[in-house]
Length: 93
Image (cartoon, rainbow, N blue to C red; front, side, top):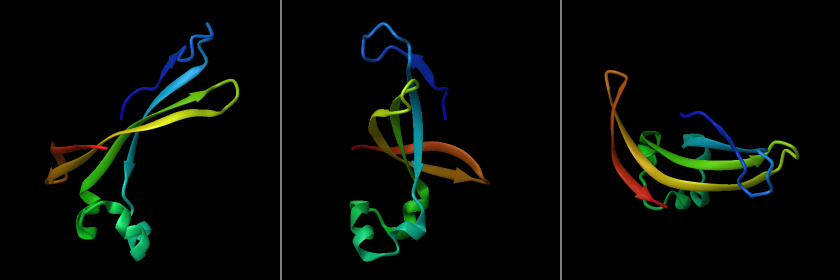
C-alpha cells in the first residue's frame, strides 16, 4: 500500500492525473472454474492466497477516465504468526 500521487502525466500543463499504486489479491472463489484456473499460469490453486500482484493505475480526475493500468510483478508473501516476513519471489509479468 502506498500513497497516490497527482501528476501531469500527459504533458498538457494540467496536474489532473492521479497515479495510484494498486495491489491485487487472488480470490479462491474466482478460480474454482477450470477455465479460470488455467489463467493462473502454473500456480497451484491451493497456493493462490499466498500471492499478490502489484500494479499502477493512472486516471484523469477531471473526466474520471482510467488512462492506463500496468501490472508490475507477482509476489509470493510469507507469513509467520500473522506477520508478514518477506517477499520471497518476484515474477515479472
